[in-house]
Amino acid sequence: MYDLQQKAQNIEWTSKNSILVAGCEPGCINEILELSIPDNFFMSTCEQSLNKDRDFRVLNGGFSKSPIYALSHVQDTRLVISSTSDTTGVTVWQIGSEDGDMIVPKTVINSEMIASALATDRNLIAFLSRSDSLQITDLPTAKLLHQCELF
Image (cartoon, rainbow, N blue to C red; front, side, top):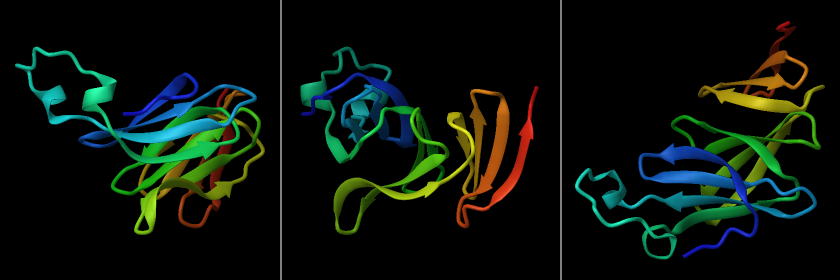
């Protein structure tokens, strides 16, 4: 069973049977949770509706001091990238670990812009700013590869 303390504006698949949800309330500590999706969710013959208290469970969880406005899971990893409205760049989060079930910030990739949309590949992060700038960064090294104005 789980209860989000604030509304969740973001959702992202982390595997076939799990999703990540994140809060986006300004002025609050926001949760970021990985939730399991029950197998019966994917069955076309399922006639019983899903119930958060019965069907979903928290796999991993963490907190952000800022509202999270964009999420992108890095395929085939336990990493997720987020952006907030009050910081430039993006935060790389580690989902769970051998030591526990926490989602913790791993690193911050700084930029001159606030990211409003994210896309990831195994080794690349692409993000757009509200001013229509595009930045592509190498994930392992955090090195800026390309930056340009789109319009």
